Image 1: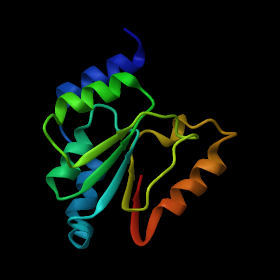
Image 2: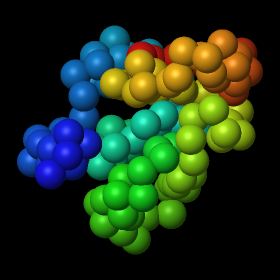
Image 3: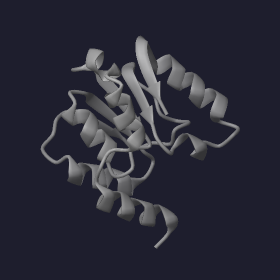
Length: 133
């Protein structure tokens, strides 16, 4: 079992959103975003995606791992409040969103691609939107 599989297994057992995302919601900044769009960048097993959906967001899940796609589909079966994009961060075309959320994924971007990816992220966030990382 490689490190990514171990991480996914632990995340499935934990089965809760990250404390980073919960902290954002505890600050009540999300209240003006109900019914809006979010990106979960590096969505893993979908714990944070599920939390965002439960709090009124349509979520674009992005992860290059086919295992992630399988686990998210399993977790969110029957929901029409998300889409999954199975691509490398440097290749993905990002939609405009109100909340860009990334937890434990930005550090995996190749340093040579970082400027380009960060520009795409910045361009994807609507004027009054939030970047939570």
